[in-house]
Image (cartoon, rainbow over all chains, first blue to last red; front, top):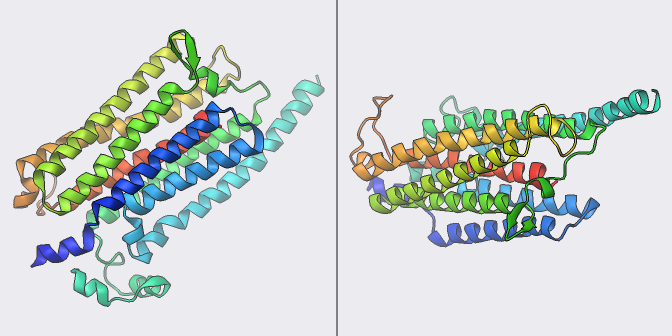
Length: 110
Length: 234
């Protein structure tokens, strides 16, 4: 009895996994194509980030089962990511400042 | 907590304060090992984020030209350089192994010992292939003169970020491969059918161990998604 109950909660139809697997292949192929076709500039970055987040989302939601987990676990895992996003934002600003000072003092100032 | 009891609990956003204030386990219906693996993966996310952010900051603030990864990681096929070929193959190998692992978890919960075990073996072989190709890539770049402190293509920082980030990821893959082989043996031997006690614990083992192992393996794939995007494609 316990086993049949367990199956209901934890196994999913094989079709879901095969679909996600296929989608991951297609998305990886697309992101490789971004480099192959030599897209540059804003288009390149947008496409790279879009395919990256789609792939990461699919892996986390279905392969790592987060789609079926309770909200508490999902939120405990995903909210700390906002701290990382803040850190990224801070370091973008810092990087711009560093390259500015380097260019100003080393290249222009010498 | 069994399925029927879980069904009775509140769902959605309201469930968060209820679960966290229940004076019991916060993660209801989640095996303790699985919760600990998730917390470990969260901390690992922070480590990899620190590496990737320092790479971003380093690359954004160098005055020299950053080496073009499309050319640096090109592979000659019949005398024609194909950009990022090896990296693309590595990506596909890792995704394939991630898929076999997801199926192994599914068959594990269905108590299908044979399918589960052999799919884990397939996953481990995929991981081994990946590490092998990474070793090839490292030796190729070292042969071309890339060092943590210099390289012939441009900004000096390129080498240290490359070896640090891919090396740390490769270590994760290698550790994963070792554990995959150990758990393939355990599965095929029937440990999880009988609930044999493990090496480090006196608790009964269960197929949930395969899901925990799967979480780690999918995480390794997840990190590669980010490395592929930021280091190789950007």
